[in-house]
Amino acid sequence: MLRLLQILERIAADKSQIRILDLGGTLRYWSLLPPDTLERLDLSITLVNLPGSVPLASRPRFHLIEGDACNLIDHPDASFDLVHSNSVIEHVGDWARMQAFAGEVHRLAPHYFIQTPDWAFPVEPHFMTPFFHWLPRNARMQLVQRAALGHMRRARSATEAAQIIDDARLLSYRQMSILFPHARIERERFLGWPKSLIAIH
Image (tube, rainbow, N blue to C red; front, side, top):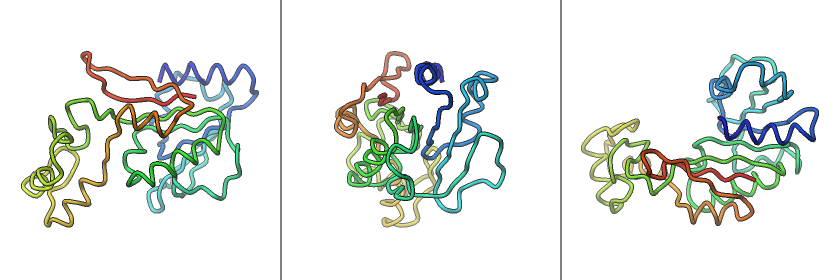
């Protein structure tokens, strides 16, 4: 949150209000900002989540809408000052969907802050299993059919195993650099290991 706050402070130097689009965001996430930040920087935050996942409860300064982060055609170019996303791009689907996601990020705001777990970290954060994501696909499918791993349920078939594995596709530093070529890609580290990647522009 400190890194994000630094970026918001810089944008606030030129803006009386900051319009933020948070792809896959939650109210709880933004509550982690220091008290009064929403008011002091005059933040207006639009949270986009998949249909059926938008909570009923809202609060001032937040707009909760349903949509597909890879296709936000209802929003004109440069509708926002900052696009934010925390651990979402790895869930949108295959490489083509990731490219579409990145395209919407570039289109909708001049600044962005896109975070995702780093493929180079040895513990896969969704399956909570060391080296899981480095194994061949067939080995991963067999493992998820044998047991529930981390936050993921046990698969009841090979088809379901494939769906579970494909729900979380970790990205490498190189892939993030391709998706966000104008960004600075920063690495968060844990005990020296590269834990997550952040594309900042």
